[in-house]
Image (cartoon, rainbow, N blue to C red):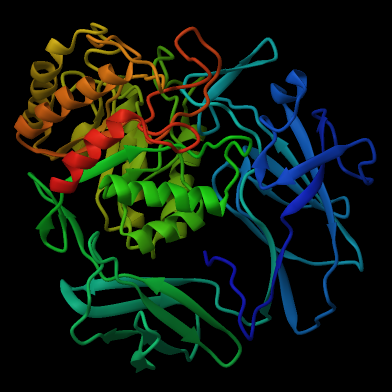
Length: 554
């Protein structure tokens, strides 16, 4: 799954901008141009752009529509790529259905035919969540019910691109590094025929040329968090070429550690959300760069893409900045439905979708050196008997797709989980002193150390704390500290960190969350979840300075 790029063989046309938009009924088919629509930005969620509460909270289908023209090129194939729409969608060209999307976080890529001088592109999006979607949810009396703590943003969230390729073009490239445990050995898997493989260093100098798809780089510079060195591979045939950046690194999970290039690494960072003012989940280069600048400033070395895959642009920035990524499929909300895993709820149809999304995620992100681990779910009901069979199949698909470690983020305790032993690394979300025994920080250390110890004893796997945190209103102060104050957040995070430092087998800490984010309305949600170390407009709370001092030394 190659990201669209332009070169002497390939053209690129960006369709981002102002589109037409309107809410539509379930039977709507865009046979004719939408004249009763209003204007909408792409990419962006529409929810925080509109001023109508009815449109903002619309449950069902919406239409996005634009027109475009292309040069006549008989020697080229045109392709349409929509980076992501939330959630399912149908794609029409001049009123004819040409493709569809099965999930809100993966690209739709399809060849275009029957092009006219002026073409009408219509995207009909359905934002409803069921037990056969990921995330899961249900509709009750026409209203969306979700069991995850982030807002159900809707829209075309990532770039819309038309690109051309030669008729005989390169479909895919997979770059495998550290082949046979040899750091100098590279293997390229591709459908390209009679290709020339050229590797360039960071300055553009040629490192090696080869007609063989397996070759060696003398004295390779490895990718790591301190020096995220990237090479560029050019694959060129008689009719096409494609360039892909890559890094040379090895990732391995042992019983006690996570190894990067055979050295133990401690995870410092955050769970994150795609969420910014006005844009919602819309991909934005300025927001992305600000996020990574803050990650480096605070001393973080890793993030988890909670609770869904991020854009390909974000993954490329992680490669450049040296931020390790735990790449998560959108399997969230799969807990606490009592039961979740049943014939009526998360069933075989759900599992097949889950497996397909794992496959697509690895296919999309396989060449990113920043990706060090794949997460198959967040806070699923792993205590249920049918959960083990369900996740055994999903994890088996993950292992067939990648050599990287597999994790699952647990809310179930070690005493009851039936799944933890199937993965390589255990991730746990724990909020001692916040959701449990609220305000009592004296319980944090003992309970956290005990919990990590139980997982270690039961599964014999390394454990990282994927979530811990306390809601905090920036500018709210209290002496002595009280919950929701900035002083409380610092003390809360400090207590947890002291527990991590004492817990054997704990390989990392991810604060929940990087920045404040939007949720559904609720008595405990003051314009969203306020556990951010940074505000929604990406300014530091006081706890950011504590974490910076800690992480710069650790």
